[in-house]
Amino acid sequence: MKVYEEQRSTTSPVTNNPSPSLLHSIKRRQFLKSAAVIGAAGLILPRFKLFGADAPSNKLNIALIATGHRAQDHFDVMSHENVVAICDINEQHLASAAKKFPKAKRYADWRKCLEQKDIDAIVCCTLDHTHAFVTNWAMNRGKHVYCEKPLVNSVEEARLIRATWLKNKDKLATQVGTQRHQFKNFSRVRELIRDGAIGQLQEVSAWGNRQVYRAGFLPSEGKAPGYINYDLWLGPAPFHPYNSEYFKGGCLHWNMYWDFGSGQVGDMGSHTMDLAWNAIDAGLPTSAEGKGDPINPDVTPVKLVTQFEIPANDWRPPILVSWHQGGALPESPHRGIDLKNIDHGVLFEGNKGFLVADFNTRILVPQNNDTNHEEADFTYYKPRAKEEEIPPMGNFQQEWINACKGNLKTSCNFGYATDMIEMMLLGLVAYRAGKKIHYDGATGLVTDCAEASQYLSHTYRKGWTLNG
Image (tube, rainbow, N blue to C red; front, side, top):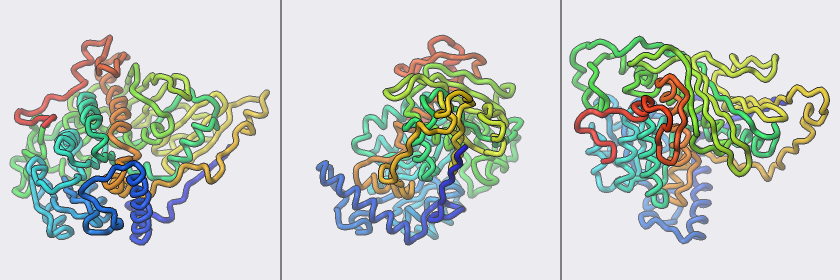
């Protein structure tokens, strides 16, 4: 058994952001690298001049759409650019952000914010059920987009965002906020899988142990306080009366509700499946099935297992991919490894061994093979030389900023991210339909279960347009 752990000594244990001195180094190094690519390719975005990463003419004009809770983790990195607009339905959050960005124009409605002509790029940290709206409107207006996970809240939204991104991918830089992707372990896991450390890949299982219980939508507490624009908070979601519990902290107070989020599938599922997705080069599944808690029409399940059939690609055969949550777990590859001790992780199974990984560590386990010594001790596997390893990406947000100014390439662009979240959401579709479904990724249709089709999309409140 081989155990590995990546160190993150250059990042803050709270934000996982580099120190200011390291951030400056990363910014300059990555920008100069981007500038070289631009020069070679002949692609120069007219607004930006190559006078150094911190030159005034080379700074993005950014709008921060939502400024409370998770959004505040973006403030330090984005403050190195020009934050020209801030937007929030909560006047208290907006006032707090204005202390950091006093020159930025203030908005309550993100639709009004996107009308500001000098905005180059947006950072979207709104509620999950509005992500697709803000993102699609921004791309339609030629804005670079960084959007927090989950990128979308339905299969239909995933397909629209992908279509809009495909039309604009040669003009816009996009990134989904699965920021753990910057951890070095993501690259080491990919290398192990691609280089055959466990032989031919056969199956991948990801899991998360969060258990957030909700009985149903909360009762009315009357009108929202004056500093909250509750109608804009609801946005495209069906009307539900105001209750202060929705506002006590971050996303776990509302994302378990079908109308506001996709539960753990969209929350830690987006982060954890990213560790798998980065390694397996997958596209859309051909089938999905899901089993879990009894269906609640208001609330997403706590305990759930979904499984998907993923087609072969140019380096591996067809594989099974699964997601486990709320206490459900795949079978451990070894009696000495208790998967309950890994909050969020991925198990890769090959024909010669297993790889168990979380965000920062990994364990190689051989297949139980008493007859083949080579497989039992991994002597068939030759690790990469240090100079052949995937280079570190640096700060995740900074990668997007550099891409906006350079070659538009990011690690978690909307093509990569929509494929992953569309698969995950199809698991919820199958769960709600109560049976295994077969899926045509080219058309976005369930081919053998008519009752499942209703769960591919959401019904929006009158006056809200997804493709605005």
